[in-house]
Every structure is written in C-alpha cells, then in structure tokens.
Image 1 (cartoon, one colour):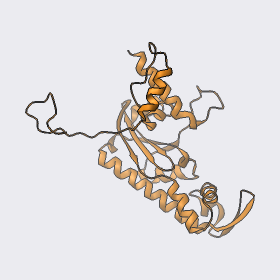
Image 2: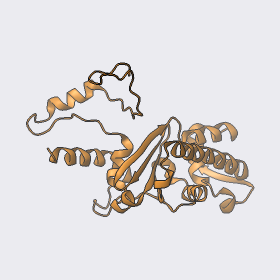
Image 3: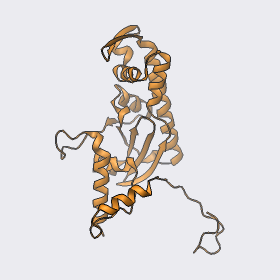
Image 4: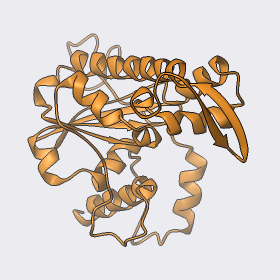
Amino acid sequence: VLNPEGMPGVSNFEANFIATIADNKAINDVNAILPSKTAKINKVYSSISAKAAVLLKPQEKKSGVLFVDLGGGTTNVAVYCNETLRYETSLPFGCETITNDISVGAEVEYEKASRLKYAIGLLGKERFGNQEVEFNLDGTNTVCHVGHLDFMIRARVEEIISYIDAAVVKSRCRKYINSIVLTGGGASLVGISAAFQEHFMLPTNVAQMPITFIEDCSVQLAGALGLAHLFVQDNSKQ
C-alpha cells in the first residue's frame, strides 16, 4: 500500500493478510431475506476458522494446536494458542493429487482410484502385503499391486506434510504447537494420523463432533455449524 491515508510521513505500509473471496451478490441476497433489525451479514469467515469453532476443544486452542483440514483440492492450515488464531493459510493442493497418481499409475478410472486410496491408506503393506490384491470396486473386481500403490500414497502424503511443515516454520508459529488435529476427507485415510505424528513428533488425532451435538450429526457439517456459531458469538457482543 503506497502513501496510506491518515499516516503522514509513511510512504508505504506492509502486512500479511488472509484473503477470503465471497460473492457479493450471494451476501446481498442473504441479507435481503434476513430480518434487517436482528441480523445482517457484515463479516466473512474462513472455512477452517469455522470448523475450528466446532471441532477444536477449548483446551487445545489454549495449549497450542495445529489444525489441518485435508480437503480434495486444498489443504487449509491454522495454528491456535492461548485461545487465539496465530496463523492461517491455504495450500493450493489436497488429497485429489493422490487419487490422480493412483488413476494414472494403476490405470484405473478416477472414481475407482478414489476408492482404492481409502481402501489401502498408508498401511497397505502392513494390511495386504507387498503383492497383487483383488479389490471389489463398484461391483467389479480390480487387481492392483499394493506395494506400488502404497508407495504412491505415502510419497504424496509425505509431500503434503512437508509443505504444511514449511508453511508453519515460515510463519514462526512452530513453537506454539503442542498437538495436531486433522479433519477433512484426507483425515479418513488409514494411517494418516501416524504419518503426521511421526513427522512432527507431536500427538495427532482426527477431529470428532462434540458430544453436545445430536448423535447423527456428521463432522461434514462442522463448517456450517461453525459459521452459525461465530456469527451468533460476534453479534451477541454488539
């Protein structure tokens, strides 16, 4: 920002920002149907902060936690300490890269590759041995060499973890982290928690919905529930 107004004698202003893109028309449409005297959208929250509002325990936010949302096309990362968001970023890749590797390497359709990814996880050799195994996918049998797929999955996961680690180191927030919590589709991969724990040498868990929610409430709803929670929380202070 050059020559910022209201700051005489300063030629430029530099800072790190987290940019969130939202459709103004969508916000305006929602505002149009909300009771104007009681509610109005005037702030946009990031996806991972919304999920953290529901999935992270107060003690985790206080003691220091690395919260990782392993999505398909993106990997979102946040660091909380002393109940404060210290750092947040979004990496432009996710677990779909693993699916693409399997699809090309094993010469199978994309949907079958996705099913193989979760069927094998990061413990392929331990569970099936380093050999060819026949998997039933969508009613059809597919023969794949587990050793090859295990290598592909593990290599990509290690790459994703290394980029997360690099982002955290660059943020200078590594010293705040005492545990790791995973969420998102990639958190369902068998052995993913162990991979993070081995790399960071920190206790790692997959996020679960709090027992305060109804029994059949899926963790996939955490983002929507978190947005509602943050909105009510911020507006109740006004």
